[in-house]
Length: 144
Image 1 (tube, one colour):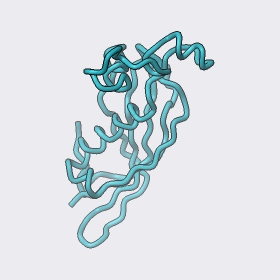
Image 2 (cartoon, rainbow, N blue to C red):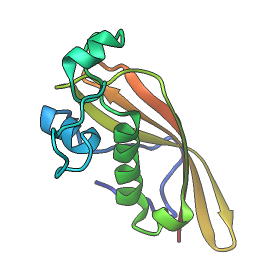
Image 3 (cartoon, rainbow, N blue to C red):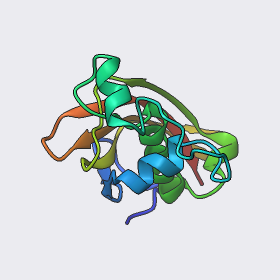
């Protein structure tokens, strides 16, 4: 994967690592502490019957799980400094079902040079294997 530098151009798109949303991934992320009796905790993210009772067609991954995939992409692009200096503002716009494959993506919309650093303004999103966006938003990061 390319790393953003001062030479990265506006319009350049970056694609993160695909993730298959397995039962194990859902349970680990949303099932509560592994040592709790009755683990995983029953909720719309871990239990099919519970999700159906809530009106969902299936279990759904937590939106913050998809948000984490965008964070991973930003750290890949900007380095660990992004955790201290970057920003992200996202909205959850679709459901991620068990066994979906999701991919975080970003495109550079604008870059500005400020005090010797190049600041990048990006559109970010996560899409599933059907090309449907399940998360959309913006992020910023800086490169020297």
